[in-house]
Image (spheres, one colour):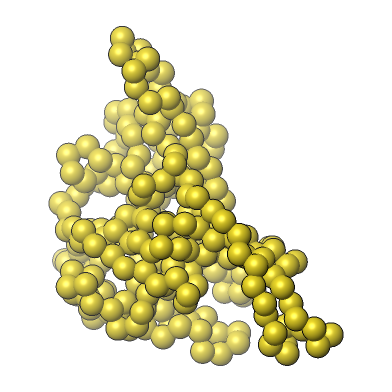
Length: 256
C-alpha cells in the first residue's frame, strides 16, 4: 500500500511575479494567484531538481513532479487579491533591442504574496520523500523564488495532516482555491442566521490559471479557479473536478 502524506507549508516572499505569457508589449503583467506550474518550480528547487536547460525541452522538475496533487490557499489577502505595483527598468542587452537602443519595459509585481501550499506526497518515492524531509527541516537544495529570481521565498508552519475524502453529502466551504466546472453563483447558500448582518458579506474571486503544460505546443493548459468565503450547497457536487479532502475537522481543500 502506498505510504501517502498530506502536508502543507506557508510560502512567503516580499515580492512575487508570475508572468502572464499573453502580455509582452512593454508591460508585463502577473497572475495574482500562485499557480501549479510555478509551485512545481518552487518545490523542485527545494528538492534539488533541475530547471530549464535547453530550448524545447521541459525542465526536470516538471517532468518528475507534474502528476503531484497540489492545493493552494492564499494567506493575508484581500478577498484573494494581493497589492500590486509596477516598476520600470532598463534592459540594455543586445538580443532585447534590435535597434541597438535601450528597452524600458514595465513590470507588474505582487507585494507580500503568501500562500498555504498543500501536497499529497508518496513517501515511498525517492524524490517526494526528499521533498518531504527538506520541507519539514526548512532545507532547500536550490534557492526558491516567487516566480522571479529577484524575489527569493521562504516557508514556515509545516504541517502533516490526517485526511479523508469529502463526499459532498452536506453544504460546505472550501478553504483553498478550486477549479470550477460550471457557474457557482447559483449554488451559494443563503445565510438565514439572525446574526447574518454582523458576518462578512459573501464574496467570490475568479481567475483563469495555468494547471500544467500542453507538451506538444509548450504552452500552458488552463482551468477556471474560484476562491470564496461562501458556503456552497451540496448540490454543487464537484467530485469529478478534482480531489476534495477534509482536514482539521471540517476544513475542505481541493487538490488538482
